[in-house]
Length: 598
Image (tube, rainbow, N blue to C red; front, side, top):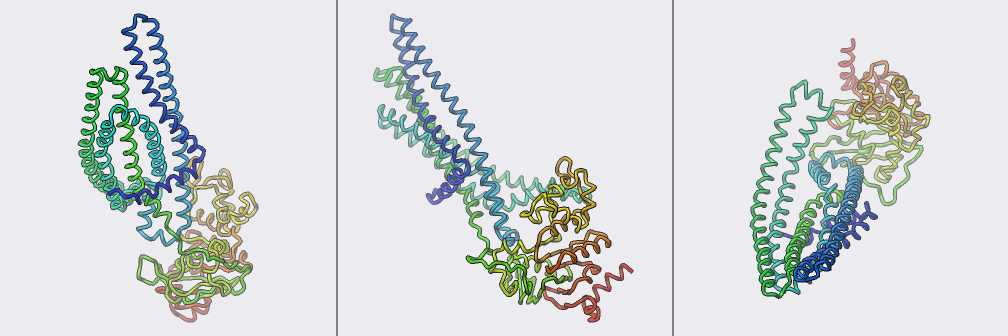
């Protein structure tokens, strides 16, 4: 059923168009008035032309009659030319408006995606909302405003035509309105059905898109070929698309059947009107020009009314889909800045303290961390070791306040991280995660994004590259620091995993941070390169702290303090020598790895 409340997103759509294309919207409104008036003028000139021809047939002065006929034909042609010119201008305005609105809406989606909590990306419902917003929002606002433009333009024309038809007979206007109602009812009914169907099939659409992405992305290209997955993933994609296509086709066929019945009523009313006008003309009540004018007036009025009511039905349909965009924009981060944030201590005195921290992810009941107690003092290197899934990376994310603890708190110099502005806090932390990103940017930009407030042409970038061992690598590139990394674009150069890791380390070294978090920072490097990087880290600290997550004990043993995580708890901590004397979990892991080298 149609609900007025469903049109609330229209306000959002108009706002988006106004924000992104104000000048073009003003021009479009002016064109609406002109384009709505010209058809009435053209219709009246057509009547005058037909009447002039009729009068000229009976007139003995054929040359004078021809002059009058040619005058009206010329004016009618001028109006037609103006109509075509304004239509072309309106198309240009709509194209500009549409492009600007699409780009603006994508900017809004990008800002919101960057602002929401990391936890949202672990919720399937968020991915459904994001998918629908990405699919619908870029074009729905423009379509809604264009529909509104059509409604106003057709309304201007219909207003004049309605007065003309009322002058002929009041019943004509009633027939005109009643004839189009069934078609509008069909549109409204199936708009709701289509929205409900598409909302219920979002996850299937996402799954199909995932298969498409895996079939076409470079990330999956090697395994796709080695394991022969192309045929299997292609079949699964087709199965999902076949299911979606068949279901949508059933909706389309059903709607088309009802629409055909509704259109039949409109056609009957049109030709009934033609018969009524012809009868009045034969009786001498109307001239031949009147007959042509009234017939065209009824035909056009019916078309305009269908455009108006169809536009309203389209607005209803679009507003249903735009609710996904509204839902997406309604997401609010829980990891947010307090009303009165406390300045982050610089330099910090006592350092970071993890106090009884427990944490579970939203989609799980299992505690990933449980009652963790840890301090990281200024200038201290703390290493985390443990089996996969023991909570090492999760703890690193909590220190960056990408999440808030489920229980307990994390503090700097005794002040909870919740009391700081998250953006200000993160400026004091430099991090390289084990799943760091390969940016298809220049080598310079790949390092510079580690501190976007620094000078991209400054000396800090080469210095950071040298400290990370990436200096010689960059020197070998065809265009040095201006070489685009990766093979996605022309003139790009692909790096090895170890080389990418050095670039990512340089990114982490660039920022003047008080805490450096390195999550498996040297896993793809040789032993010599790893030793050199760790020595560089030691030299860089100078009162700053470092958290090192690694499975390589040759690196871990050089830390000031080593913490062993097991099932979310710190079960051992101390220096390498202390833990070896303890002969516990760490000693066993170390000996197991050392045995392989021996």
